Amino acid sequence: MERLRKAEVQRKTNETEVLVQLNLDGTGSHQIDIEIPFLGHMLVLLSLHSLCDLKVTARGDVEVDDHHTVEDIGICLGQALAEALGEKRGIRRYGEATIPMDEALSRVVVDLSGRAVLVYNVEVERACIGNFATENVREFLKAIANGARMAIHVDAIRGDNTHHILESIFKAFARALKEAIDMEPRMEGIWSSKGRL
Image (cartoon, rainbow, N blue to C red; front, side, top):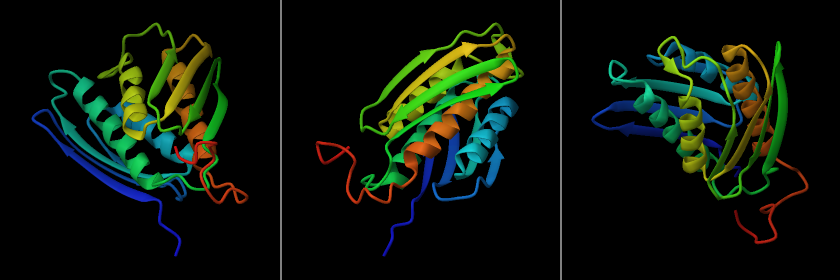
C-alpha cells in the first residue's frame, strides 16, 4: 500500500499558536488564516506553485513583532515537510528554479539532504511590507531548512521592487521544492550513495 505523503503539525508556545497541514501530492489548494497579510500572500504562492495542498492557521504576538509568528510557521512547515517525506524513498531530492517577477529575478536551489543549511544572498530596499519585516524571509526559510533538514540556497539576482524580489523568491522556492519532492519512477530506494538521507 502506497504511503500518503501528508502531515499535520501543531505548535503552541506563550508567543504563538500554529497549525500546519500539508499534502505533498495535492493540487495547490490552500487555506491560509494568519495575521500577517504579506506572508499569507506568499504562502498562497508557495502552495500554488509547488502544487502542495497547504492549510496554515496562526495566531501570535504580532502587536510586539511579527518575528515569532513568521519563525514558528516556518518551523511547523519544515517539520510537516520532513514528516510527509518520511524516508524520502523515490524522490528526486534536488530542485532548482529561476523565476522572474517583472524586473526581479531570483534563483533557489534545494537539496533534501538530511542536513540543514540556508545560504541567503538577498538585499532589499524596504524594511517592511505592511506588518511584515522583510528580514524575516531569512528567518522563515531558515526555520524550514532546520525543520525539514534540507539545504536551501537563495540568490536574488536582480530587482528594484522589494515586493517583486520577495515574490520571485517564494515562487522559485515553490518550484524548486516541487521538483525535489517529485517521484522518480526509476528510483525505488533513496537517491544517495550512502543509502539514506
